[in-house]
Image (cartoon, rainbow, N blue to C red; front, side):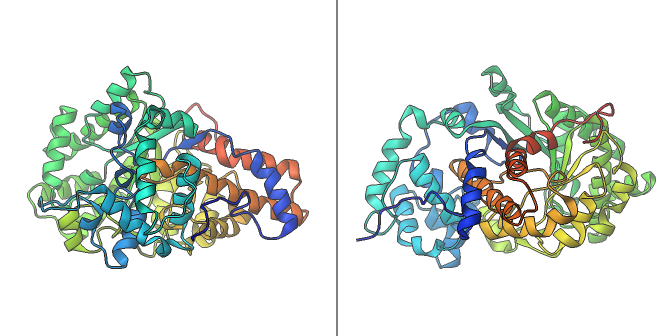
Length: 479
């Protein structure tokens, strides 16, 4: 018989008994703190509609590309996991069958953060005490189905249960923000906030770029047939996001290049793009230019800028054509920040009205580039380990690589990055355990007092994320 599913109270804490004892003390001071979720991808409609989740597979498997990519890597198809297709072809419609496939493949997740998150969700959120397996699959499905049908497991109730103080959604520049207006009417406008993501309209080599720019003009009620009109439309949309409670922007570029173009050259490039004549070199130059423009806009309107380069999106073109974006086929590439960010930081790095948070999935740049940059420029904060790095060992490596140069207080603290709503508390819990362990080692080595370690842990879990994402104005002193 498989062992019962029980979470060890010291999971992910140090194995050294001295450090583990200290880590327990530190962790106890952070485990109940509110969650600040400022890099999220849960759809606003989930909270505006507040409907019961349809089934365990739709909640825990289909939207979580960490889960689906592992199963696909072992021979399953996204269609087998209920992931919709772009061409309308039939995909698995039986949630019990999808759930059974996860349970039959449970061993694949050994040693992965997905295993940690899923176990936390099953035990702490849903009260399950049986290991997933082929034998237990149907029993677990029935138990979870009954649980998510309860009123206390609807999205807004889970906001309270999870202790989520604020959560961001990620919305394209063309979003009319209708769901956020509904949330404001329901009294949740300051708790579920939009994040402005303009990627679709700044990468001129995207197949739908002209259509997206036209939609930008329509939503902003601004003529985008000229470069100046394009910039005016972006400013108008940013203001709409601010009025809807937005605190940040989000920029997913292949490169971190922020080299600006002369105004006339940018306008000429934009005109070529509108007629479909832009080259690959034009696209790279315009993307870099627009990061610099966006930094200037953030300085002016106070939205915190988030940049996360170094990911080759949609690595398998056939999978993208069949299932769309964000299906587990975004693969990291080497990233360079020092030269790339210099133009932006030359102009805005010491401006009290500007704040930029830098994320990476290239660990090699933490100690070589990002920690030194964050440790020098008052406008910069180093983002938490993100995507493939929000794992136990990835977060430990981050602390080892970044702390000695950037310290703790030039980082953003932990903010999760997920579409899988129920995994949010598990992700924050893991980060708090890892930070407790790192700080415990400093205490055990007599490099930090225990009182300082506790204070730092609380800051990393709660105070720093709130501070990092506070809107900036020219009157606000750097901190």
